[in-house]
Image 1 (cartoon, rainbow, N blue to C red):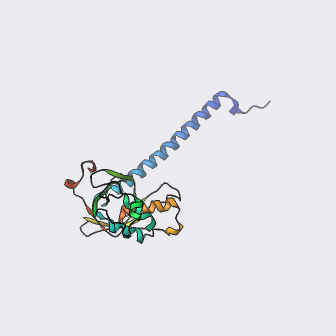
Image 2 (cartoon, one colour):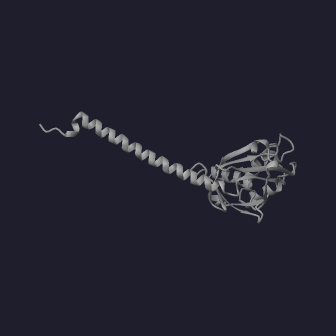
Image 3 (cartoon, rainbow, N blue to C red):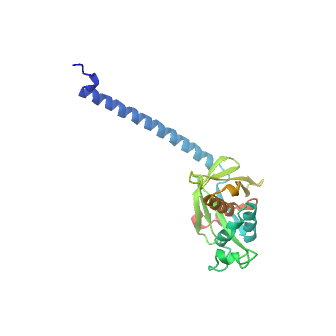
Length: 217
């Protein structure tokens, strides 16, 4: 009876060894390509003038205007209540809705920082030095920033364009807003958050090392 040479035990062992070696080489090559690609992306971020801490005194009226401009006026009470404008911890979205002026009874302004790290991390810091936001960002070019989202249509990526002053000490962001009428509830929530992050068209100032909160360094 004919018997394939592959059926012989020592041949099967050799073939298995060659297969393991080939898979190991393939994995090593892929990992090397990923590592070099990651290092290249990180090096590009290291050179970005956006890296650092940016601060502004946000005003309630500015945020209200930004929500109206984005078509998110109905999201405004909930997000305004959580921005630190309140002079009392008891303020709620329902209390804000009682007034024709959403900022009635709220503080005039509140300091806020955004931190862009070299490794692609993003953080926000409130007026008492507490971290209130965290995530990751990408820079596809020298005037665009993207928060990737979770990869689904429900929570889409967020894109904004930015521009520096001539001296590089201030920056302004312009949020790219989709057709809000076509947004899901999660999509609207995403852009309500993004509106409160960027304060489109308004100036953020670079914070020098001596002006940073201890945890920002």
